[in-house]
Length: 114
Length: 113
Image (cartoon, rainbow over all chains, first blue to last red; front, side, top):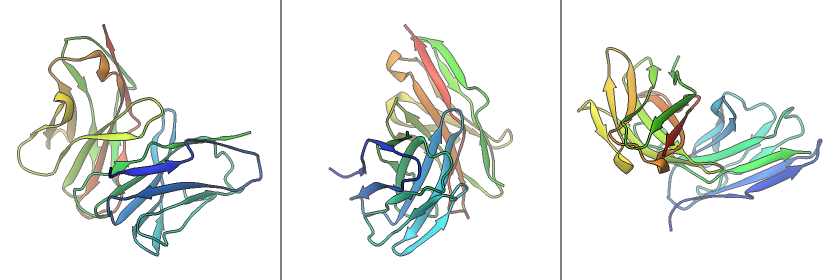
């Protein structure tokens, strides 16, 4: 099966801890994205990557970090600097970063800070 | 600046009736427009997109959307709603020069049996 996987599905973190959310795709897509979803606010872009070893900040990058060492992987680290990290996190990919190609989404990770 | 507006947080419709979920957009160039559906605690699923050509676009699960350039709208429609259509619907836009997708805040659709 082709698609995007995210793990874990649920994640609990104590204040002051860093946590890393996994995102893997076997669609051979060049572009990958991380979004944060909060009730009533839609999806907000955290980071995106157009190609391996390159990524750009989105609208709400503060307190987050990413890496793109492999085409199929785009992990997101939520650092202790993120003041309100409790949210639903969605990873997505598309064939390319420009143009009319739609995004494919993973199932999401729900992060809760205790 | 690119943006998307979904003016209705909630839409209720009776099963078997037609449904419409509204979306308006603002982009600096020619728009690429998308509709996605999200079921609880799941990722978004692609429904349909407008690139160019016919203003009426047909997509998955019997959904269609009408592009109206003069009104800068891209409303999602279905002739006969099913209870299983109850979900959260997102409109998104991308212009033909940009890297990012811009999403609306979502519309919760409830189909009443």
